[in-house]
Image (cartoon, protein in one colour):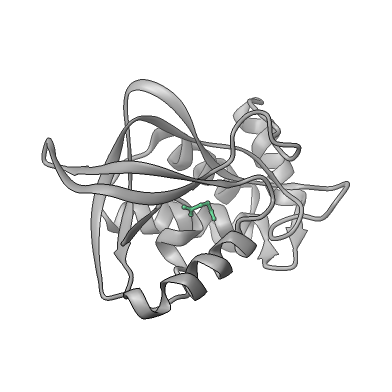
Length: 176
Ligand code: SIN
């Protein structure tokens, strides 16, 4: 059993795994369109975290983890809890070098009809919201900057994430 992470699961998997591999899912885009009221914000003042939206022709790079059978149920239960603010499990193919490397991996997606979905806004507005938000898992800017760093370390350029991180850094002197 494999799971595919494209947000915090890239830089903070927080569960044991047997193997990992970087790869991409096809026809999706990664955007800071999901509200977070339980990790990077609070009810009434949500932060913004990533979800995937269908986008024919686009790829989203992330990291897949292979889980051991004996701990699978426990890990999936914990991940369902961690991703409970609007995310649901789906199955995806994971690709690398134009080939399918994992035929079926679980991914947590937060679709546009979930109650915490915030949707598009200007990058400036998203950056302001990120800089103003903090939740039980910490400040929202930490999430953006950690994801940006992890993608760069993987050699991945994600324009939306990179541009947002740049805005956040320039407004946040400690991270400049
Ligand atoms: C993921 O990382 O795959 C899901 C979204 C998140 O927890 O940031």
